[in-house]
Length: 213
Image (cartoon, rainbow, N blue to C red; front, side):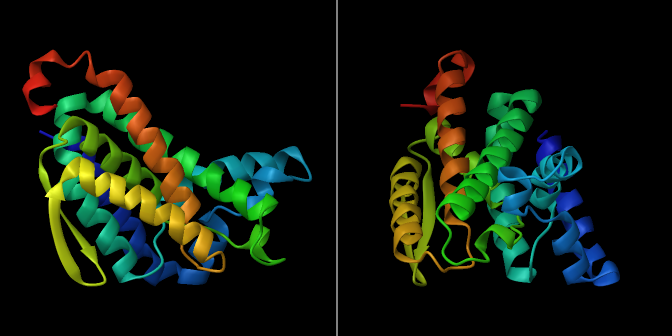
């Protein structure tokens, strides 16, 4: 039973609906990840606050479509990944992907800003963590068919093909659209962590060896 997947989704939904009580601006400005708090904190308090927001930002979503796509992907992919890896490893992969994704966003926004305000713009969402789960799914179930929508055109392909396409797309979009409000660097960072951890663990999961290559 993929309990962790369901709990993460439930927490995200609770936090999302709480934005209607506390307000979107309040939630994003107080719990979103602001790059400068990590990359150039003026004091220890700001640094600790920045570290806190690396985690809190994973549970904040800006709009219905944002949380819908993230939680749907987590529901579809996370259950099998959690069952194969086990709850502790799944949680480690999920949060490690989210943390590295957040740090990747902070690093690129601070050192390669698209504009002078980029280091001050908060990032929210579970996308980095979800991309990590996606990467793990591609490693653990490479031949499982997945649907990928490119400009509303559905493409069904083996999971490893979808992951390769997504990795290339995210990289190209990050380079071609530096002013986008989407944190592509967080997606790439999370995906790489998911791939690395699942590859490191896959060899020891002999009872599921038939699901791999």
